[in-house]
Every structure is written in structure tokens, then in C-alpha cells.
Image 1 (spheres, rainbow, N blue to C red):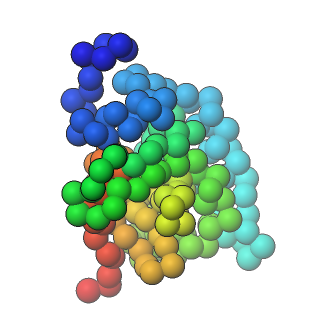
Image 2: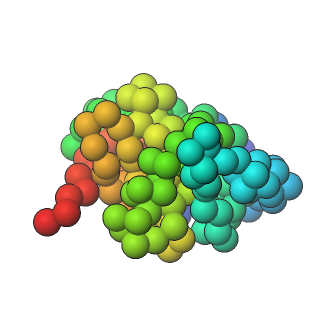
Amino acid sequence: MTAEGPASTRFPVGVDAALRAAGWRPGRWDIRQAEEWADRLRAYESPAGHRHAVFPAAVEAWAEFGGLEIPPVSGPGRQTVPSAVVVDPMRGLHLARTFGDLGRALETGISPLGEEPDTGALLAIDAEGRVYAVDHTGDWYAGPDIDRALAALVGGERPARLSLN
């Protein structure tokens, strides 16, 4: 039991603590902010004409976790160094082509989600809610949904490299 009520069982204990330290709580929902981001992303067009995909899975992730600067769990990660995560789709505003290319390769829409500020990896979410990281070394699969991706990244689980094989 915490001061705010019972601890969530939705996330591993360390990840739950990191999320709460960032301001998350069960039931958090800022749809107004999420819709503002959706409007900005829909309106953006790169100089070469690339545009962002926006869909319900992205808007829902932004509504629940948007604006959070989530610290990594303390101590060693499960497989790698735990990562801080910032959930702010505007971090990927100028990557419409990059996310569009990834979406075409995966045959789905991709929308910006945020960033791992320590590594510079940009996070994205697809129309099914799967989460990816894109950095200078390649494209990575972070998890099948926002919950498991946050648990993996913040908890220090190694993402899987995407390949065409």
C-alpha cells in the first residue's frame, strides 16, 4: 500500500515506482494534451512532403503517459542498463520520413512516441500498439504494447533488433 493507495500490479515493482516518481498513477488520462499533439503531428509536413500517421493506439498512449519523464529503475537492469524514457511525441516531429519508412517496412502506420534521452533513441508506436526504438545503430522492437515496452526500457531489458530476415 502506498500513500496514494494500493500499488499497481500492472508493472513490475521497480517500474511502477519509476512511473509514479514521474507523476503517473492508475487512471491518468490527459486526452486534451494527446489531441493537441495529434493535431500538430497531422499538420506537420516535411520539406519533402512526408507526413505522420496518427491513430488511436498512439493517442491513447499519449493520453496516459504523455509528458512523463520516467527515470530508469535504480540498480542494474535485467539484461542491460535501464533507460530513462520521455513520452513526448514532439521529440519525433521532424522524423516523418524515418517513421514512414519504418512503417512501410513493417506494413503498418508508425507514430512518434518519445525518446530515450540518454541514448538519443527515438520511440515510436504502431497502429497495433507495438513500440519501437530508432537510433543510430538501427531499429529495435521494444515491446508488444506500451506497458511491456516501458517495463522493458525502464527495467533494463534488451530490445530485439529488427531485421529483414
